[in-house]
Image 1: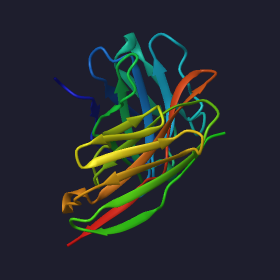
Image 2: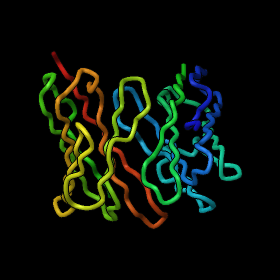
Image 3: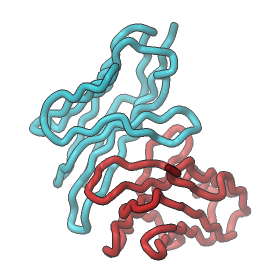
Image 4: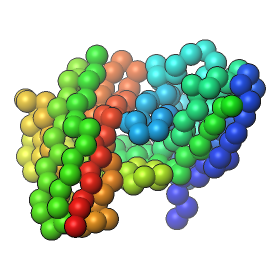
Length: 113
Length: 112
């Protein structure tokens, strides 16, 4: 079946602009995660959605970052007033209920000029 | 808080065996994962341990000791295609539910 998809695959923006990154999880997966990965670094946890529960936003680096998940499926990560340090690969992952393995999307490579 | 440590880089020879160690500190341990990530690609799942002991899956094995906060990933009969980053990740149960924390990864270089 289809895996996790993300769009756009690449995004170049100017400092100060807002960007929206989209994640389509695997159908039926109840858990959805957003991570950020800078060049040569590990994955930095951003936010976690599980079913209808309130999301775990503890990893969001500032109030410029927000995310929502509509209808328990598609998720959008929004970065307002982008800064150059926001440049990174943003990875989305999903997992089925009661299963531990996360399935990652291909990521969105964001470059803030 | 949570903390995961693994070596930054390792080099090994094709056909050999390599062991990548991971130590962790967490308050609500609920499982440890190993993921493989080739350059420019997304991570892919390798193994999951929640009980102590060794889990073997083909050329790859993963070991866990919960009392020591320690895991290793063992790669046998190394191939050039095994050159990648290997990410250790711990699932932690907090007040808000489960969260998976990733280490910085170990870059493995396999040489001929």
